[in-house]
Image (cartoon, rainbow, N blue to C red; front, side, top):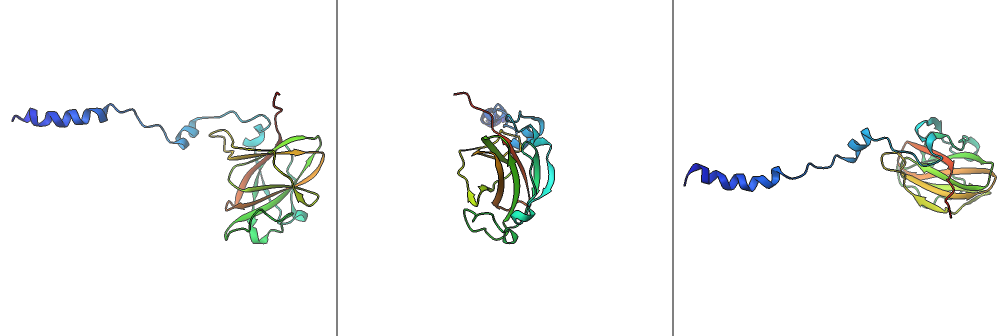
Length: 178
């Protein structure tokens, strides 16, 4: 057998590999160059201000609806919740409270940049969410939860996370055409 005939099977076997499509870039590589459109009402997400979350309702800061905040959370065992959280915190979890004011009745969306339990509390009880979702790819918004709210003051209670700081925004949800 000649040297060419010995190498030919190796070349033929390698040919399909050389013609395989290039792998897709990783999500974080795509996100480095992509600037997604933020959902209606959440344009303030990219301009968040640092804010220390309260460890009780007495020390809770006020988040302005339509403005983003990077809430610095506290160890869960130091936080006195406004209502009992959905589950007992695990070791190393963080939590925090903030207040917000609603002027007009409607659907309001709480957007978070990481996983956490969200409770919106009024008059000592947690309100039921009306919808759940995720933010657009590459936006930094991991979770969005909608609540039907009337005028008044509310407590935003965050728990069940290990994040030391949590990007947060509360905004009026866009109206959906019926």
